Length: 221
Image (cartoon, rainbow, N blue to C red; front, side):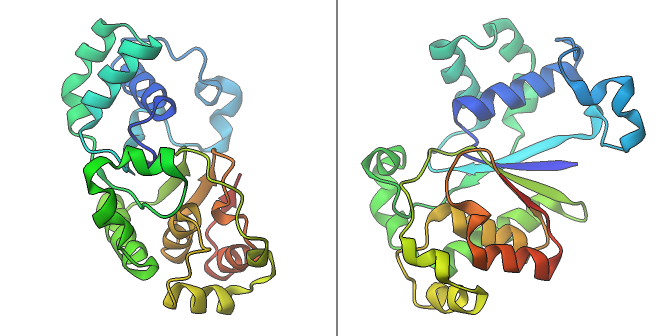
């Protein structure tokens, strides 16, 4: 099972991935992972050893740097644990995220690249993220999980759009469509599951519920 995380260099993602990799390496116990218990075995869930990660972020840098930065500020894991899994963390692919609205704080994350990233159209962003997702997944299924910074509330008009209206808005590069919904569109259109952990718009738009039903790709959150 492959998990592609939006906001891959953040604290939530760092805690998840470092903890998972450390548990796979037997550096930390898996006792708090309920799905590893006997009661869940019959569900046929992917075992711990078969889970791998990738993702995207507005910030540059590899995942080892992100884990070290988070460890120095939030002290989630000891430096010894992070150092022990450093080689694996370096190999986790992190691509560039989508900068589309989100406010000044989100734009600041992109740093000097913000101006260039903001010129990308909706369709260009979707095509790029779709290519990144497919390259990461290969022949396997993938789940896209959004743990990026929470977006402002979307324009109320989006709640009345069907899928055709959303497609037209994407073609017109309508600025009202938020980044989280572009990620969700790319995932669902490709047949990948999409989960909103962050309470942003994501796949909650009626148009994307329609897309989920059309492609059979699950959505949650």
